[in-house]
Length: 391
Image (cartoon, rainbow, N blue to C red):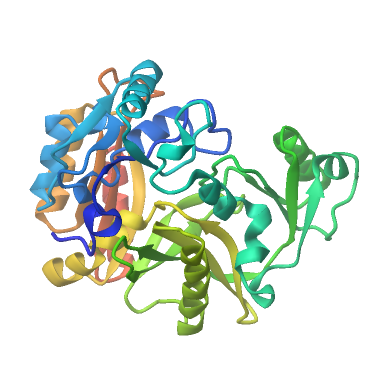
């Protein structure tokens, strides 16, 4: 299995890759174990580029499952076990004058901003939801209002009728829809007020009748090439939370949407951006195109997209579904199940998390792509995974 691009081809050399968020700046990110279990999601793209990841994703048994699927695993993995060892690494890297690519910006006192491979201030600007309209043409921006937290907290009504979407407008990193509340009632509005009370600003957006929701992705390389990585249909719950992605060769966004997102990416590049971007783009029931969020970072579907062409050419599959499974079964049992799916060319593992001490709060995680030639085939594989204790 060969990825479309490796980290070296995108970023060059001379940095340490770090996909984890800060322990002290993650209010709008998934919980600690979720971040630890995803810290190695790009390790098959790393080669000998140093990558900081949790020790429980780089165990021999975890890497062996990736290798069984024909994936290369990073040879320079720098591992942390907890917050103390994580910050020991950051302190050492800073003292050694090393540059770091942070998927999620850290606080200024956690790492010297001048040693960010991608400028920290630019990263904050591009990912703050309040700045969407500065990067996207107006007719492709949903109707929205920026509210100070006082305006939001002291008003019993929103600028739009229910349902309405409220989002945190903050420099703090975010992901997975944790910073989004869909308000369908006064009770939802009260929930949003409780959730966002620590913010300085929120964005209220008109609710859209969405037919399709795509994450349209690009990479700007250090050599100056803008590469379209592909698009992944996003699986979003009724509460607005991210739950995985579909990839279907026969179900792609319109060319106009891809070109629109390319224009946004070019604008970011003109400001100095380098690396991954996932642009959340929706097609409404009346066939209008809107961009609802910008993610200038690795996204949940990035690694899967980078292997899509290989899956199609080597395994002959045309439909894929990326998601993260968890299991409270013994690792040996999980390993045998995953190996069986790999041997049948129905599962491509991307990152395996085998906790040193397995508990209900720290289960086994398998980030992977299920593949087939139809959604029905893939959903049958999902049912089989569930029967084997994965959820």
